[in-house]
Every structure is written in C-alpha cells, then in structure tokens.
Amino acid sequence: MNRLWKPISLAAGMLLLSGILMWAGCASGGGKTRFRFMNAMPDQNSLNILINPTVNTTPVFSNIAYGTASAYTAVSSGSQPFEIEAAGTTNSLKSGNISFTSGADTTVIAANFTVNATVLPFTDDNSTPATNNFNLRIINVAPFLGTTGPGIDVYVEPQNTDITTVNATVSGLTFQSASNYLPIAGGTWDITVTAHGSKNFAFPPTGDLSFTAGQVRTFVVINSQGGGGTYALLSDLN
Image (cartoon, rainbow, N blue to C red; front, side):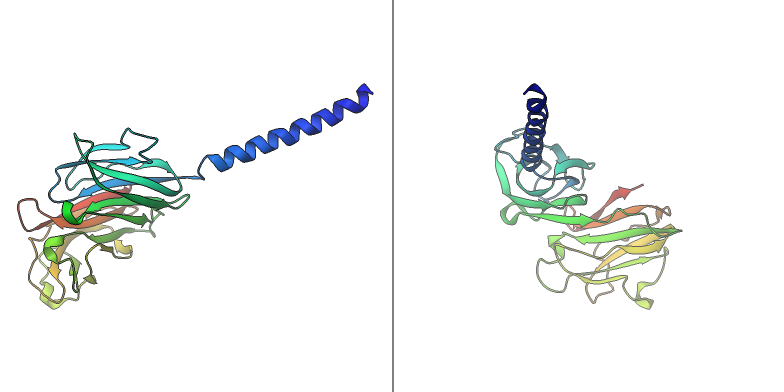
C-alpha cells in the first residue's frame, strides 16, 4: 500500500504546485515593461506621478521639473491607473489609466495647462539604429503654437541652412502628436521649428546639436514658461 501511495501523493503535490504557480502568474499583472515621465505642463514647476495610487501611495517619480523627464523604470504591463500631483501636495491634477505594452518602453508626458491637462503615452522604439545613423523622433506638446489646426513644421539641417530653400523634415505635426523615428546620419545638426506652412521661426533655432551614431533621441517642442516656445531633448538610448 505504501508503494502505491507515494507516487499518487507526488502527482497530487505537483498538480497543487502547478496551480499555485498559475495563480501567481495571473495575479502578478502580466510582464514587465519600462516607462519614463515628462513634465510638459507650463504652469506646473514640478510634478509627481503615482501608478496604481490606491495601493501604492508613494510616487514612482517625484519632483520632475518642467521641461525635464525621469529615467526609465520598470512597471507592470497592462492597463494601470495613474495620478498626477503637483509636487509637495497630494492634490490630484489628472487621473485615469495608461496601457503599458509588455516588453516595450513608454514615454508618458503630462501636457497642456492644468485646466486642460492631458497625459499622453508614446510608445518608444529603442532598437539599435542602422549603421552610422541615429534615430530622432519629434513630439509637439506646445500649446502656444496652437492646440487645433495644422500644427508645426520641423527642419533638421546643417547650421545656417536657409530653410526657405528646403522642405521641412517633418511637416504638419499636430498638437499632442509624435512623428515617426527618423534615421539621420550621426553628426551636428540644427533644428528649427515653424508654424505649419510658414518659414518664420517659432523660436530661435537650436544651434549645433551633436548626435552620435547609435543614439535614439526625442525632441519635444514645449512652451517656454517665460512665454513663447522652447524644446527638450530626451536621451532614449545611448
């Protein structure tokens, strides 16, 4: 009898262990992904973001200054509740849900003025660029350039290029949208922003910006808190 009982007990134990592991996998909330958080709300000097705030009352990122972004951190994939707070307070400025794709990187941008605040997730492509190239993405979250209408044009050219003689690198990028990733040869480039269809600078060109082959960068067009416009350059890869 003992010889028969032992294998039956082992099989039952294995089934029980399998069931526990399956339950734990379902309860974990799926695979891991990464996200970073950017403050592009012109009337908010510093922001916090909480993920699943009813459970995790400590911000994932704290004191993110205007025009800057955090580093990437891991987060569970799937639909996650979030809350944006002004740093130093527990007053919610915006809440809702963000969907994080398993295995992907996401840039989450808090955008527009507080009265019209939006939280925008952009899926990042941090795969290695082609040989000798870097990849550049443009995001428009500058309300001073218009929240409706045709958007902006962006020129990525050698410094001192007369933009009246060339076509825009990105044309008609509307508010709160992103371009595709652009493969560009590593080197020094000047980035100029205009209203769509115009050759007049929306704000002064960047001057020489140096990019190395193998990098991925995101150029974010934002309001200047002092009036007008400016930009932030985010380091995505390398």
